[in-house]
Image (tube, rainbow, N blue to C red; front, side, top):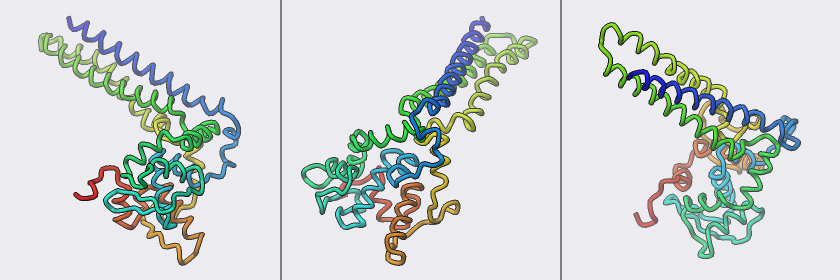
Length: 275
């Protein structure tokens, strides 16, 4: 009877690990078939929006656009998480998408803006451009790899459950030892696959491809590597200081912000304006 449990464990382990390997191989080969300049990604100079997308996806792009507009006094960001339009004329496609996402009333909650901007044409075009260059992981590859990793984890749990069930129905002596050893093999297979995932496949669940991560890593941001925050004061160095502040936000996200009210304004779990 326990052999049936063993076959189920082996089948789940083999099929899920094989699927993960195939999907990861396809994802790794995807940049090779991408359009140029994917083969010359090292020469790619990232814009702030491109850096934000590679570092944190559409939500990071929204954060960057909102903060940029807020610092130019063309949009008000409240610590309660509401954004209010001051100047309804966007200066680029992304800002126009943000204004459209806020809606005709001129005010909206930040999480709603992020959700709307995810499907905006400007963000879609940005993602397609980076994917074609081999710098971003395609949505299909990211979804497939993440799904395959979850299936391997599920198979690992199933192997343990099958082993426990088998050990409950066999005599403790002398059969338990060999039975446990047979189940140890598929368990080692799934655990080994998950260990490889951590170092080799995990990048394909992120927004940036390995090539994109290398380009992103070459961007100079204040406080990189030491967890330092930036206060966003641009008066000292003018436009250079402003760009450094926005670059830090694009690459490191809200962790780069020293202002707690600004962090609260960009948070995704927010209270209502009268809470």
